[in-house]
Length: 208
Image (cartoon, rainbow, N blue to C red):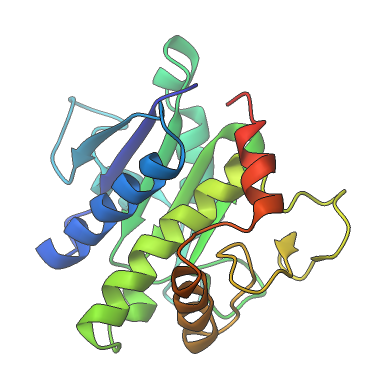
């Protein structure tokens, strides 16, 4: 299993950064043997690809002033360490993210490249407990995509903005609003799980 490298830009508060790591801890409890490395918001090298802020600052900005999520994914995909030491990349930002033609995205993954970028921006009007829940859940949701959850070939998936699960109480359900996303997160935890049995089985078959 590939290691997961996690980082976040300087726009996250300590509470938000802690929620990212709590989400990773929960994820690793579901998938024993998975390991992650927390690179935080610091600078880990000189020059290019040097920090989460570097990735965000080198991505394009859409006319809406939002960071182009596809640009961030491309930078993560092309970083030199992906070749020398293959891994999964998770990057969080405090900036608002979007894609061309869309209003915003909570996060987006590129499973073939093992990279995902996510934002805490849209959760900041939530009560603190719901904000932390949303942050934890979005990292688990996007990692689920990378591991093959709710893949397009599976029966009963929603294809709006990618393939998503339709099982109640699964964090791989699609949430097009903050409220819907939080409700999916609460429903899953009320059932004492993150992923439904179908998504969990798909993720456990992953060779990533």
